[in-house]
Length: 409
Image (cartoon, rainbow, N blue to C red; front, side, top):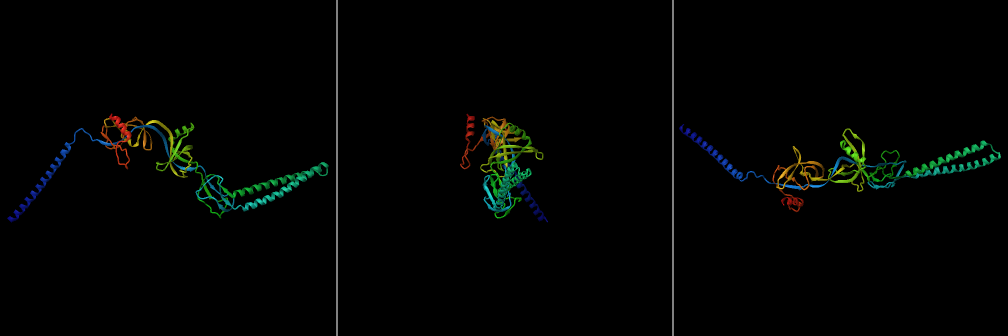
């Protein structure tokens, strides 16, 4: 019994000793960590802020356009569904799908023989009626002489005169039938009513075509010139109408879906006569020469209407514009290589540049990259790139170097 008590006491002491050793080890580790932090803190000089690397750009002066943007689609000025105006068999197709044709160009031929036969018949009928008319006129002259001599009654002369007038009407009707037969013969040759691009062929040679066919033979779409119909908000309509009434030509540019590639330039043609009450927008139509075929019917485009141009305004890269609780601002680099927060009033944006209505003057330097940790009075280190990434050389750009050199002097 005594030996078991001694053994338990020994184990308990051993466990207590192990626990005490662990506590001493943890305390020593904490002291070492604290002592390691002190030198690093002691190495910092109080009151000295960190220098932030930034990219800057000078404020330049230039012209900036005021634009109205709208979504639109390309609409051809004329689209014609070419149909046959007579019934017959389609003998020849003289166009290729997608071909550009001119007005009056021969496109197809319908069998002309039935119309040629009809023309021959009415011409023969007219020759017969003309002969009868000639004979009736001669008899009328004879009756006039006999009436003067008293050999015929006045009634016979009047009857013969009526016969002549009747035959003249018959001859005139025959002439109308001849003209109609010639017209049907001309309709057997189908020509292009407008110039444009031919669509897909709808009827193959050898088929019977009729004047009442709904589909027709082909569709021609005019491509030069071509129009773009786009919409703008109703609030933007008054200045547009004001310039149209003054006779000004407003330029309209058409861009692709991503608004990166300019497709064509034209001018505003007209404004619709009503505002859509469902969307609060009004439709505008612009015309484009489209000589290079960049615009295609039913193509989606972004239209940009040039309303006015501001001359000699400060312009900065759009990346320099910052937004906060107090509005829009930029970081301006001072002579001491510190930045100051400058509130600005934005004008219009074009591409990657924005005009400034108030707050900046030309030749000032604004931060365009590295603004995340900047504050009022932060010190900066200007590190602009002059060379492309392929050359692998970094350094201040010529414009920035010129401005910073002038500040150092």
